[in-house]
Amino acid sequence: MEKNQRRLDAGFMSKHFPEVAKIVINMIYNQQGNRTVRRTLNFYPGSYAFFRVDCLSDDCVNGGFEMSGIINSMIRNHSETSNGELGCDDSGPRPDHANIVYEVAIQYAQ
Image 1 (cartoon, rainbow, N blue to C red):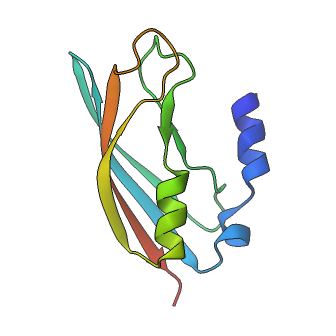
Image 2: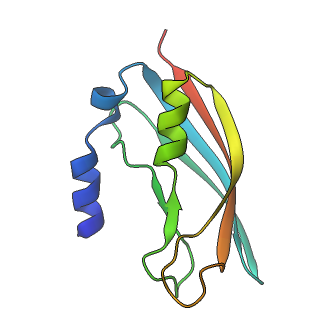
């Protein structure tokens, strides 16, 4: 319920970023020791401007990957691609249990 409220509070991409046609986040999720998962997230003008990706670990305590700063910076600089690595911001006993290698691609409206 809290997550849904945060999405609603974020508003729509079309309101905050009218110059953006599409955002694609490709990532490889790596869980320490045993799991690698490829994920792709697509955001369109009608999507919520909420760029926090949940951690896939069952025992993660409110963790995830905050992509807002990356995406906001890209839009501010009119960048089309960015890549890097982020660790899960889990507040539990295993803060280094998962990470992602990501690539963000932004398509701007013509």
